[in-house]
Length: 159
Image 1 (tube, rainbow, N blue to C red):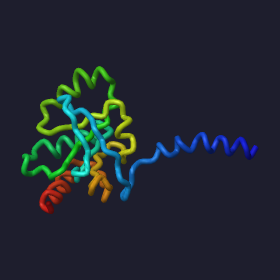
Image 2: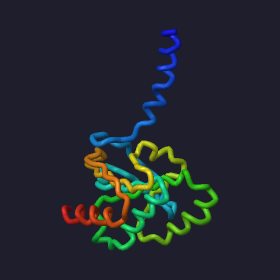
Image 3: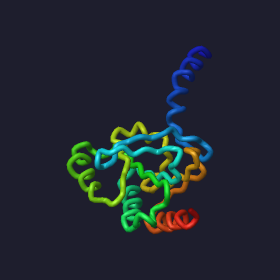
Image 4: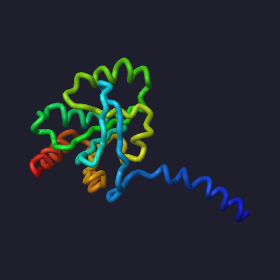
């Protein structure tokens, strides 16, 4: 019986390790994705702010916060990543991504959900991850574009 439990424990440990998400203090892996224009978007050591959405609601919050910003109002080193793997591929290809092409900012699109699987999120919220050399300094979740806009404005003032 002990042997069986030990074997099961060893088999399930990798699954548990992959289920966790990044937390403050973790260094995230470099992320490279294609954006809505099929150009490369990369999270590097220079990235200071990583916005992330896994749901349509979270994406709408980020879109509403970023759309009115001019280039000078956008925080330095900001990268936006969206996990669109939950979206039906035909909807993504023929509706959502073409609409994203009209947006005035770049979105790194994780079409399979693998690259962004460890990024933290909360249901129907936008995630803002503050980074220093890819090390997570802070994680905040936003349920409104107004709150996210205020946080981005504060970041922009402190830079």
